[in-house]
Image (cartoon, rainbow, N blue to C red; front, side):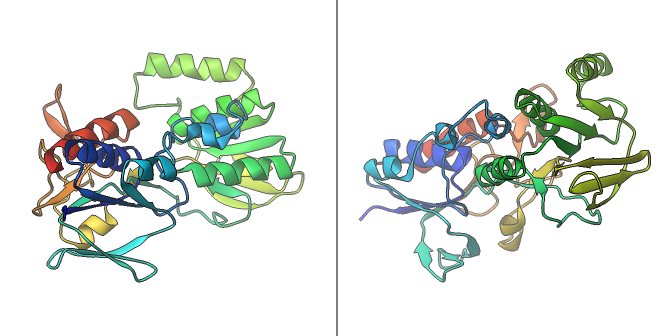
Length: 312
């Protein structure tokens, strides 16, 4: 019998690991355990699905569970992992199933940073992290016939959402903590982006701190800041993401300075036969010569292929 590879997380890193490992070693038993109901999908275009530029959510799915199974890769959807026993080599899921492994891949991605703000749990307040979130947001906008959305955060997700909603004729207000959007870039580029936003009717409120979310008067929701308040049909929390290393920490994996799982150039972690790939782990920056965490799909795919070749 072949050895067992269990992959926790079926995003870009996990899916590419599965495919590469199976190609290199067809006798390997590969199982992907995915928390949600979608696997191997593109998360970057989800704002454009919400804005109806992309009509069908299935267009974001690169490979279905059925396609994986055709190549001998088992996919278990809606299967959160709650524990890993590294001594006996078993993964335990929320529904009390146990999966034996010889090789383990941690591909747990990121989690959305949710600010500690009153009203964050009100109906109509969302974060966008995965395809399930996108489907819920799109349905809410449609069902409420939304006219305006308040976006807290002017980073990549907030800007992409404002562009997509503009295409759907939904007005947006971006509330951002700094004076310019996308402030990880240089000021001249961010200033150009601000000009483009304003030219297209996006209201940008800079140097503002959102304090509370509550029920509104002229619209369902109201966001109060230190610069006034704004009302809308939906509030999107888009203040960033962090590596989801919770499970990794619980089993004793080394965590890097970035808060992501520390790996070597073979994608191996600090525990034997345990690998990591994707947004949950670090990658080596060739220019700065430092280990960094850059949550991008192309990096996750490359890391997955590296891991798959070393496992397979």
